Amino acid sequence: MSARKGTLVDANGMKKCSKCEEIKNKEDFGSKHNTKDKLNSVCKRCECLRNILYRTGCTEEKFNKMFEEQNGECAICYIKLDSSSKAVTPHVDHRHSDGLIRGLLCVRCNIALSKFYESIEILKKAITYLQNYRERL
Image 1 (cartoon, rainbow, N blue to C red):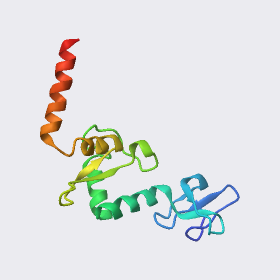
Image 2 (image 1 turned 180 degrees about the vertical axis):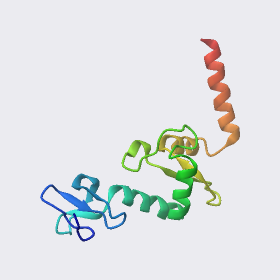
Image 3 (image 1 turned 45 degrees about the vertical axis):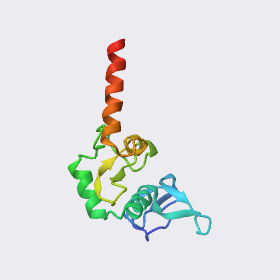
Image 4 (image 1 turned 120 degrees about the vertical axis):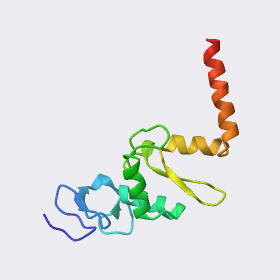
């Protein structure tokens, strides 16, 4: 089954992503009002990766290397990362002060670090708090 990039492939609604060149279901593409098929030419997974890399300045090669080194898992909680699911979309964790890239995290761990202001001292206090609470039960 051959098709030009970004075009509908068949009557079943299959489309070829212009980035990864995989043939996918039309549900795997975001909507875009000014195209003939009303779908983005890039699949949601590739679009997500492009946005992640743009925001952090990470290269695709570095992202792929980190993903492989981490076995496709969050560097903190080890949940499997998957670009097609918002709950476990990989986020490039970076130090906000200078942009140093540390690794890939799931959305929960990424948000948690930011809520604790990336502070080791505050995280230690949170651990102590949880340990003390557990001991009181």
